[in-house]
Amino acid sequence: MIAAAIGFAIIQVFSHHSGIGVSPDSVTYISAARNLYAGRGLIGFDNQSMVVFPAFYSIFLATMIFITRLDPVIFGSVMNGLLFAILLYLCGAIMNGFYFFSRWYKRILLSCLVLSPCLLEIYSMLWTETLFILLLIFFMIAIRNYFQKHTTGSLIAVSVIVAFACVTRYAGVALMCTGGLLLILDGKIKSGKKIINVIIFSIISNSLLFLNIARNISVSGVATGVRQKGNTPLIQNIYYFGSILCDWLPVPKNNLTAFILTIAFILICLLTFVLLFRNPVKGYSYESIASAICVVYTSFMLLSATVSRYEQFTNRLLSPLFIPLLWSMSYWFPSFANKFTLIKRAGIIGLGLLLMAVFQNYQLAADYETYDGVKDAGIPGYTEDPFPQLDIVVFMQKNNNIFKRKYAVYSNAGDAFYFFTGKPGQLLPQVVFPEDVQKFYDENHLYVVWFNDVNNPDLLSLQNILANKKMTLVQQFNSGAIYVYEKD
Image (cartoon, rainbow, N blue to C red):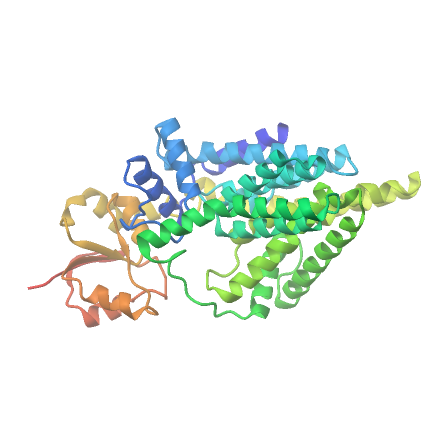
């Protein structure tokens, strides 16, 4: 409870200046939640059905709007603070159930989670990971409960949690694979019942994702939005993955260290998983489940990033790994130290405390750097100073009526246009999709709102637009410009 209270307080301190952090993805979730609450369905900031992201987080936000009667931007810091507090409380409860329980180990690990720059970044933003990480913890609790009871009810509980995880983030498929793997490896039940349980789990855990994809196809013709093929080789993704591990740990950040860390991380988690599951007692413990999540989730992220193109690995994308990683790397220490005599044990514990002090000092330094930035400017994103004070933003908010009805509004930051004006804004087409580019050029009446501070090289450039379409300048600003095209 103390850790939960501290975690809640830190989120409130971080968001004190300008509220919860809002990124382009956040605007999509917010707009879909607002439209759903208003009875218009899951419609994004571009006035089109939301298909790129799964539906549940926006449904969750819409439910919170219904309960609080407040906009997510207003109640976001309190909501995320509560989610973070619940996460910390449940992590403490899980560590109470470790095979070798140690109060001091639990307290130290909880302090690491409370001060984690990785988790604090996530819970300072309106992101799906705030809910997904919590569902991951619920999954660990539920599947361990299943292994203890082997009842149909406990199996359904696991399946339902995974189903909701899959429609919170598509990466929830990794939890589906983890659950399936653990069920198949379960040696405590006969093969016939095991097959039935795997079938039940597969049907229920896939159900919401199937409905989400079916809905996406019916409204847009695509399953999960238009996505580009991967253009980053596996070896490069391993480097990117390792660079995030370097950010989490007090180690030098370079290509060699990143590569070694990634390979070592995978091997250690895989070895831990194999050793624990060979033990009939420890094989279904929280520690073994955590190691299984690490192995499957890491494999899923590396392969998916190689096959499909999305942003380079960030702390956000890999944040669900942080807690299972910390547990997988450290769970053995209390039982290992307990095997030695008093003097040797004191030396081992002292060394462990020294390493933990170095790690905590590293985290505290990162937290202070973050606080030093957010206390005066706000959390990075559209609520961070000086973005709301940009002259183009101030002008659009004061002169909202300059945009004629039935004129499409395109922008290199359509989400920002919606966030500050409340009007639908289309994102400029990506240059790799010539049909979308041609559709844009064929528009008879449109506005182009250009933000100089937004850099997205995948989109059609302003130079290209002005060279191929006879745009009229409406207003020039230091931070951007507004253009209009009206066919004669």
